[in-house]
Image (cartoon, rainbow, N blue to C red; front, side, top):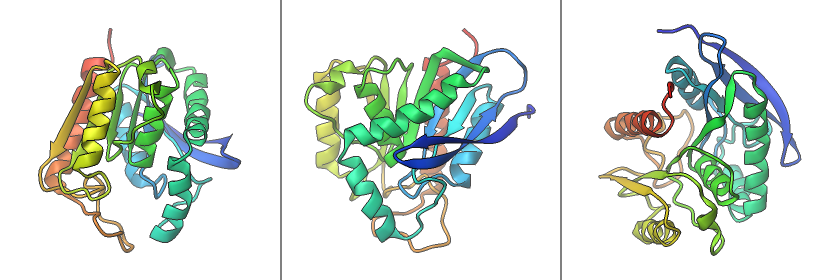
Length: 241
């Protein structure tokens, strides 16, 4: 295992002081970077550990914040904040751009080689950065088959990969079809992986609070989804070019 370094970074976004987790690989040279977005509950040790794992693979990784340093373990509070956010592309893009600015400002980051990977709300923010024309190498999302404003998907400049559970009631078949239609109409290099039998947030280890209906951990598919993300980065954003 390579030696990595981590630090907490604070930055303003959405009227809040966000607290992100930055993980740096060993060495001093610029490296490709990954902007990592969390589920709607917010930044937790799950995403911090994923950022660390990406740094061990040689990437600069920033796990960004959604709620001003808070983790919203009350489903009603989480939905009260996230539903208006998901309905407002401008706000999502603002949160994404603020985090992206922090990542780009890191001296170890190669600003021409950045990917966005996200889960749930964090994945929706990555997609909105793409729809805003941001120069990314790839966008990878899990549980985030959100569609954008008409025509804006044509501004996405990179491949898009999406994963979803077949039994996810929040991202049902109709939503999968709408997302696929949007990507196809925009001429994007896109892929959609459906993990059979999995619910929403299937990738997220069990939490110590009540999970909303339709949410559940699927250990086998969680491992597969992580391998799929790592393989996606190896294809579209290799550490050495």
